Length: 132
Image (cartoon, rainbow, N blue to C red; front, side, top):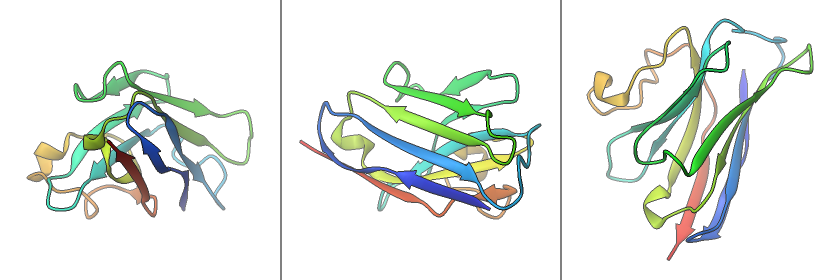
């Protein structure tokens, strides 16, 4: 099970964090990619970022230079992946979902939909709202 935390509301230019923690199953999926998608009302799902077991990171062009993904594996019982979002813009407003699977693909590979049916594990979603 993945549990998300963080998010909230901020003015443009501000910062927020969203975190995703494995719960109840120890460090499950250690050899998987952990990442983030987001979806705004009426908009296609967008892949944001991912990190793998070797800490190789990938970012969408829309967030590159503003968002940072990191992982904390110090606790043997769980793993936490955090998306730190800086210089937020109103267009970053969306529900953010964390996801875990052997490989996370761009949402375009799923027809612009968040691949809830295809990815192994999902968080519950966290609202991020950026006002102008």
